[in-house]
Structures are given as structure tokens and as C-alpha cells.
Length: 401
Image (cartoon, rainbow, N blue to C red; front, side):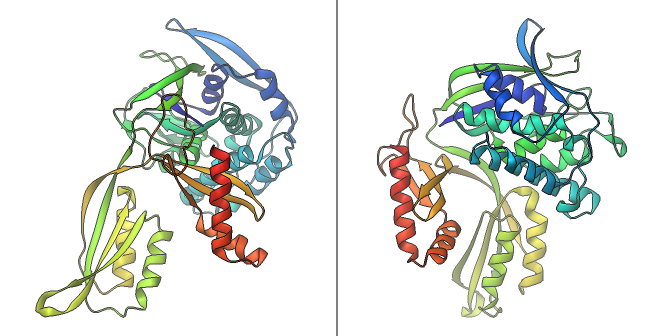
């Protein structure tokens, strides 16, 4: 599997992403046939060339000829599921984009995600853009998507709800955790559709990034910008670094007067609230009292939510936190076919070859079947959990060899 790096110096939108991926030698006719399996009518696809600042870029266009209804998350998910020309991976990725968008819109409008009405993003062109990105990533064998720091733009934009600030509320919500240069750009630089694709399918790139480029593509936007070419550059290839890196915070509390039965509940709540890791470490407190150090690792934007849970569920009256930098093995999630059904397996790479990501046994990859998938399969088939995990690991090893 390859990595796509989105060099978003002019921001991005769904159509720009599709255009840039088409420019990476993607077959437009195959894309058109795949998208035609969606139960949508009243549109026509086109690709054209635009030259901006001497850069030739693909302008992907969806010409809509019929009025479009407002759609809910369930309706869009059902449409994607009906498309028989799309693989399960494409469907899963496309639905994930709309799910994170519904969550963001629901939070902004104080509405359950399933009740959110998609206006602009529920239209044919946005559905085509999202599914088109998911299909193109699969066709180009891209397993991981990285994105550069993003221009936040400034000013105001017009929406179905009226005049809104830039970045749009949904965009700002979705881009939590992504490096954003607020005030960079004279207009809306990242659309809600583009932000939802990033939230569901991408992560911020480590800087500096050691990267071997195999293909480069450019996708053109619709607006003309005075200070930069309005194009998205996509680089497809392989990361050369042996490690990924990210920035987190660590929250800690010393607790010596809590019923031990409560800790299981606390840990579950913290994980549900986006904690990356939770640890309980026995320690000795003052005056020789035994206690526990509760440690939580998370993204900085989740600090206050996690702190409120700790204060509500434990007896502590004070927390400490500090930023931490992490090095971690590059990882990918693969859906592996087994006799017990599909099992997700996390593949952590211990090294990268010059030209491929193929595993060389467990020396090249650590294979970790997802516990929840294996447990569900074990219960459904009435077999020991270890049998499911062993088969998933062996199937993954064969898949990657």
C-alpha cells in the first residue's frame, strides 16, 4: 500500500482532491463507471485542464441538471451500500466521511447526527466528490493519507443557514487536531466536504517528512486566488522514515481514597471520550498510604473533556498535565478475510523497504488483530477467542506476503 501526501498550500475541496488523484494517471472512464452505480440521476461528469501559474491541473466537474433534495445520513449511507460497483473498502471510507460530518453538524446545531439535514453536502456533487475520493484512493492502492498544514482563510461565506464565518463552523469542528493557519487566505480555503474527508481518512503529516515520490497530481479549484495558484498537489509514494511522530498531552492524578471498583468505569469513560491510552500505576503516597497514579494520553483539544470526567468520577481535586512527543511505528489497518468473516488487523511496520511495504514475516510487521472484531466473531461462531486471533494473524501474514 502507498501513501498520499496532500500538499494543501491553497486549501482543498472534494473536487480538488478528485481532480488531483485523476491527474495521478487514474482512468477517468473507470471512475465514471464506478460512480454510475450510485442511485443518483441528473448529473454529468467531466474533466478539463486548467493552467494556473503555469501549472497544468485537472478540474473535476459535476454538472447537475436536476434540483436535489435534502438528505439524511441514513439515506446517503443506503445509497452508497446500493452501489454494486464499489468495493467494501470504498463504501466504508465514503460512509466514514459522512458520519464524521454528521457528528460535526449535529454538535453545531444541537441535533442528533442521524437527524442532520445535509444541504450543500447532501447534493449530488458532494456525494460524487466523497465517493470519488474513496474510489480513487482504492484504485491507486493508497493505504494512508497525510496532509500538510492548512490555510484557514478569513472573512465570511454564504450557506443554506445564512452568512457564516470562515472557516465554516463545521470545517472548524472537523479540523480540530490538524495544524491550521488562521487568517491565511482571503476566502474559504477548506470546504466542509474537504474537511470531512481529512477527518475520516487522513492525519497531519510529521514535519519534516522524508518521502519518496512516485507520482504527482494537481487538482484545480473553482475560485481564482490573487496570491497563489488555486490547486491541490497530491504526491503518491512511500514514507522513508522508520517512525511516525505526533504531539499529545499527558494528564495525571494521584488518587489514594477511591473504591478500586470505580476504576474500570473511569477507564471506559475516558476511552469513550477520545483518550488514546489510560494507565493505572500503583504508588506510595505521603504517610505511607498506597495509592494509584491515573495517567491519560490524548490530543490537546480533548483536555477539558477528559479533565471533567476525572473530576466527576474520582476523588481527586487536582490534575497536572504536560505536552509529550511520541515516536511510533507506522501503522495501517487492513480488513482481512477469514473463515470467521472479515477481521481488521493493525499492521505496524518495523521498517520500510525502498520500494514497497511488503512484510517479511514478523520481523517487518507486527500484526495485531482488532480485539472487538475477534471477540464478536468468536461469540458468533462459538469458538475460542485465541483461535480467531491466530487465524486472523496468519491470514494477514499471507495477505501481506
